[in-house]
Length: 205
Image 1: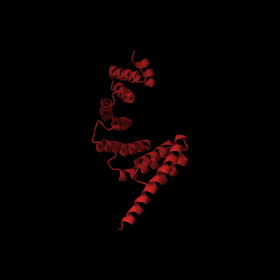
Image 2: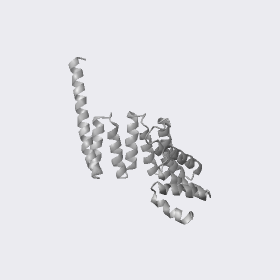
Image 3: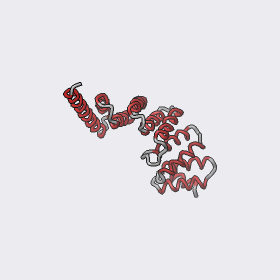
Image 4: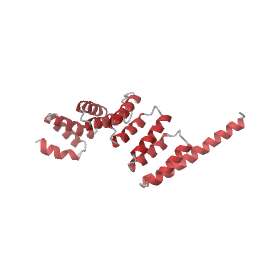
């Protein structure tokens, strides 16, 4: 291959990348004004032109989520994993889609993969959400033991996350640990969760 051929290929790639970014920017502008149906084909076009930009997949997935198209959301992130297998958030997003579709066992598998790919590293920004959402699935399955473990880990990672205190309090209450439940609900209220006030008023006198 001659140097001129290499230069031509590099210019073509650059042009594709710029065009992809342009489609993405237009799609994001539509996303911001909640015009999700028109944003979707633009994000899809951006991905067709450039599969090296994770943001395009994330924006498309968000647009699908906004219109409750969870199967398409799942398929989008599964495709993204082919290009970014070491990105734990993608497995987490798959878990969210599967949970919305009530495929609970598969959702747990996806969240577990997210934790594994992240190497359970405390520095991973959303690691606490991987555990929290997996705990929520366990709670739906009435697997209180594993749900409790994951809520504990969530709080260990993010001690100011009121959702974990609220849900852990629910488990404690059902386990007849009224004092523990009330402590968790009071903490959740302190952290800004107003919905627990009714539980505190009713059960924590």
